[in-house]
Length: 141
Figure 1 (tube, rainbow, N blue to C red):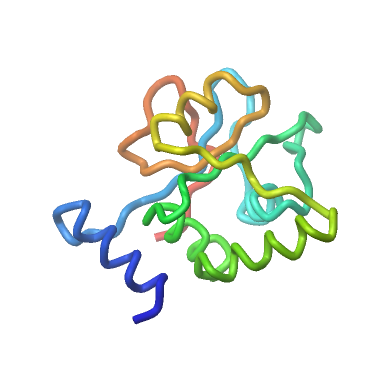
Figure 2: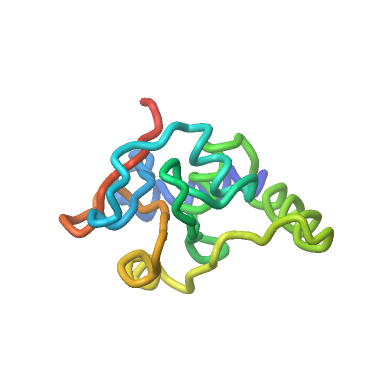
């Protein structure tokens, strides 16, 4: 079984209902960003540029390695499994062209980083979003 398929199955089991998780891209509500396009989110999380449309620096934050949500996010964002994403970042990092998103050690740390780091942008399960955060991108159904 492919790693991405395995991760999606694990995610379905963890959600308890078999329903697929619903990742959304969020920023702190106070940041002033209303919406981002699929292309803008892709460019930020794939290191093509690290600025928000306003020109302010963007600091993308990844879920922990092995997280089913991380696997699902990149599968839906760029149609790549985690091994392909890791290889992509290895090539870019060693060439000095870009650095990967900041990697959190837990979902709790993702939220903490979102609320304390300037320009932070991350993806969470929709159910984790509260009034402190604003959803700026949602995948189409």
